[in-house]
Length: 282
Image (cartoon, rainbow, N blue to C red; front, side):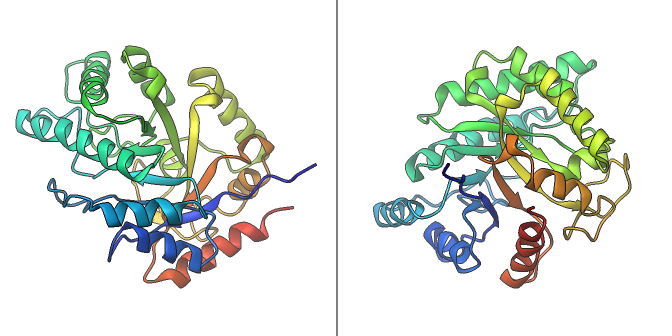
């Protein structure tokens, strides 16, 4: 029987062009990578030239899937009308850039809860997400990321993701990205085998494992339930190695891209964390 290819990588810089991110990933043996398709700190996006697109698509044949992460500026639940008026077009731009680069998934931080009730807040996010999906000339799937729960941020609870998909008219185009650090900070403990199985049972019951497309592999600087989003090197934080051992050996997730967002000063930091994860494979 043919063994599935290990889909393991890290977030890569697009300095010099998106195709350079693929080369950086390959230089440290990534089999998948995550990128921003534009500056994550600006609404403006420089158009993608035909040469850049063609080069990226050609190089992507050797690595993948490539996953994109949407700008942190986007907030589909904001109480600020100006932010909403920038966020929806901003998401459309991101989706269309993914289409041009043939990127299948766009990870999105869903946004804030600013309405009077939880249901109203999640309906607002779903409604604005629908507008973007319906107006973008793109087949790229949006992946809602589970969050740590800092401030008024949504989706620290699996139920929030379930409800956004339920409220959306475009649920078939909405999947999930699971972040280990965020889940732990939000209060999901999966440091023992039983707790790990219980958490994924809950995820499957509430959301459905079939909607999980990407996993962010990050240890946590902060304690369980802290609601503070601070990533740490694999095995160096409060999660420890056990959860990553379970993930790296779980046959349910063999074909799912596992991507590092751990602290780094250079590619060698990613390389170290990738090797730690590879060493956990039994």
